[in-house]
Structure formats: C-alpha cells, structure tokens
Length: 224
Image (tube, rainbow, N blue to C red):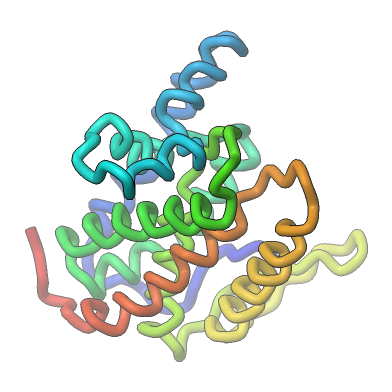
C-alpha cells in the first residue's frame, strides 16, 4: 500500500517537516557522490551499529556513541529507501506537526528516531551491520497520527496483481495494517539470518508515537 495524501489539511505551514525532508534529500545527494568505500565508512561512522551503540547503557556519558543514534535518521541506502520514507513523512508529518506545534514536533521526531534505534539494538544486540534510515522516526509520526487523527482517510495506491487501484482507506485501518505487517516481519526476521531491514525500529518508533501522541498531540497552539 502506498499513501498518496490524507483528507485533513494542516492549518499551519509544516516548516519543520519540510526542513526535515529537505535535509534528508540533501544528505542523500551528498551520499550519491561518494565512492563505495567512502559510503561504507560513512555508514559505519554515522549509522547505528548495534554491537557498538549498545554500549551506551554501559557508559551513558559517551557522547561519541550517542551521535550516530541521531545522525542515522538522516542517512539512506538507496533512492527507493529515501523516496519511500519521505513520501510517508510528507503525507503524515504535516498534520502531526500542526497538532503538536513546530518545536514539540522537532523534539518528538528526534525522540521517535532514538526509540527506533534502541528497539533495533535490543532486537539485534550482537550485530555489526550499520543501520541507516529515518524509518523509526517516521514510524513515530505515524503512531502519533494513528491516535490523533482517527477520522482521517488516506488516499492509497493498492497494487492488485499488476493493476494499481486507488482507494480511500480510513487512517486507522491503513496504519493498523502497516503496523501489523511490521510486527509479522519483525517476528519472522528473528528467525532469518542476514535480515537487512530494521523492523523493530519501525515497531519501537510507532509505539512511542502512539504514547506521546496522546500526551502532546492536542497542543495545537504550541509554536517556536
């Protein structure tokens, strides 16, 4: 399922959401100019390596270990990866920012990304494979949307065999199905060696989004 737009228009310009999308695209364009070895070093230095970042709990004051927990959400591995993530952020982020206010939304987004990274670390504590992507943070935005905009509908492109079909799905149905898919894939990935998708980052980010969406979602008047 591919979301194209929702039916609720934001009352304010989503400045933070637009800046986040622009930053992600700018970083990816920078990545595109790197050689394969340079990109590997970048991912190892600024992506989350569970066996390395997992040591944060042993020494929470180690700032060098914390930096990749945030920089990873601005790195992506392919055009499909970043375009898919930015589409979801564009569809769901503006309304969540409108509900939370610009400043709260920024801190919420970073916190959801952090929660996603921790969830991935706990699910793969020995992994030395660097993980990159904004999926955990965007899953948090989707979780907040799920509890804040229950009456919204999502214009969705649904591929049925080879035929793309446009339909409007209730947001709660779309997001429930999306989350259920992450849970299934997360459970299956635990038994499949070599998995390269951080399913538990999606699950952790979404769960935090649902929790915080109930707390700070209604504060529509908060601004910078």
